[in-house]
Length: 153
Image 1 (cartoon, rainbow, N blue to C red):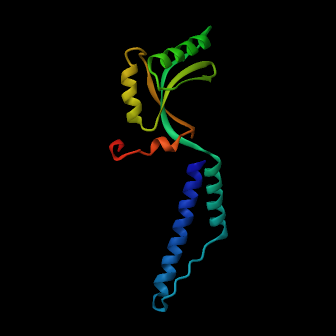
Image 2: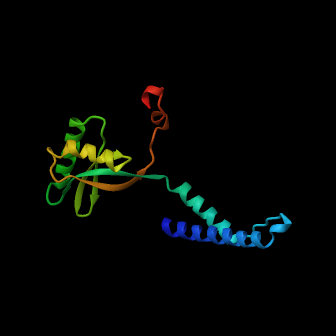
């Protein structure tokens, strides 16, 4: 849906720019540029802005450690989650129910490379781990993201 709106927005901006360029090239001697645009374009841009303000998510990656199904799969998934939290402090683990499976996922990585580095640490203990694209809500403490000194850069 976002791609559709982005495509329409790009096409509208391109058309307006093309009209402005044509108008400029025919009225160059006057030194006056007038950009005329359809009201629907500004309405579409406003809808796009409103949609982005409502949807507060960021793209990222999580490592899927296991996909469990069958009897006691829920208990096994939550046991695995606790084991990961105990063995890897500072890394969050999640249990997601994707019917009929309980999936155990690890981490909130911003890049695929970060996820891959951590996957290498998990690979011996949890064979069959894979990196999954994810979109998760923004719950970032921006103060932690800004370096306190130049040494942190």
